[in-house]
Image (cartoon, rainbow over all chains, first blue to last red; front, side):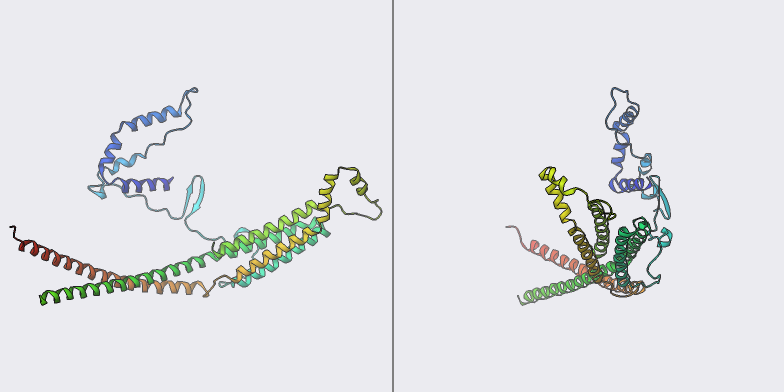
Length: 217
Length: 150
């Protein structure tokens, strides 16, 4: 909800800097009739029940922005960005995006817990383990079919480890993308500087030539 | 698609092949004789009595049954090999988060320096543009003033 209102704030402040539009909106008879419409749609007689309801009216604090074009500081600032946890449509969300570690999800961690994990080696060894476990499951299903549950648990924990490893590669990927973008930007700026220098020199050369021809006249 | 997403897709497809393989094998498995004391089922006689078309498809399924585990296991091994190939193609160049952060700081400094130089060049170029425009205006005015109307 808060995010919707904040975006509406921004839309109002950027879209209608002139107060004329606000005056039109404030004085239009449509607003009054739309609230009447809303009331009639909320309690319709059973015969005339409408298939759709009208849009809700804009939030009432648009009136505070009447003098925004003359004095931008007379109107209240938009609400600051939310930090920490917030509730949105009944669900709890957090602004800090962190990959929850495997222990928090109750899954045993099958690769060594270092700060510098060798991703390729661990991914390959997890793949081999996965194949072995699948073979084991096939054997168990042939020989002792009632003992499948433990094997399936092992296989699912291997899959969870695999996905966790891949997800923990994402920040590395993000930083590598950032480095790539910055290198591109530096290259473009260098190119622009060269272009400007070149054109300035050419312009000065043209001017000198023009002066020479004028003096020669 | 970037390589990490491809790896994730590959893991999911390995899982899909696994459970599909086990599922089809369990569903399509022909019955197995539990003990040599039990009599042979009268399958050939019943097949001769029943309609020809249905037995043809059933016969195909039971005849082709030993091929299924071979195909499914070949698929599984192929998917695992592809996963290994994708892992080998991972561009994990320099080691560690610190090295990347250091590189980002260096690039930021260089970006700032070159941004300032760009700004300086831009301002000088705009100043020269204004001078040229002024000169051009004066020259145009002089031309206009020199032309006396007949």
